[in-house]
Image (cartoon, rainbow, N blue to C red):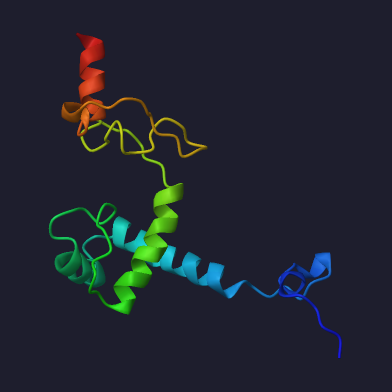
Length: 135
């Protein structure tokens, strides 16, 4: 019997592998797809139920993993973490874009401003910055 490493088996067929998928990465991608649906279609039944139960104090992207939750919710937050690390935000009018917390500077990279943030500027929105430029 010939033993072959898993890394070689998951290579595409063109590179000598069998083209098998890495199940853990594939699972996280499917969970991220479910998370994207919750974000983009907030009126669907699943989104309303889950956000009503787990996201009462914070938004879906900002909520923390509770100590006691279902396996399904824990899995959805696992997919959400993949999206959070790779998602960007269009500014629009700037009312909902936080200067210090959201990735809004670059479309290619997850870039956030950093520096000494004063306590009163934690919740600063981009609409305030654009208002200051006109003045």
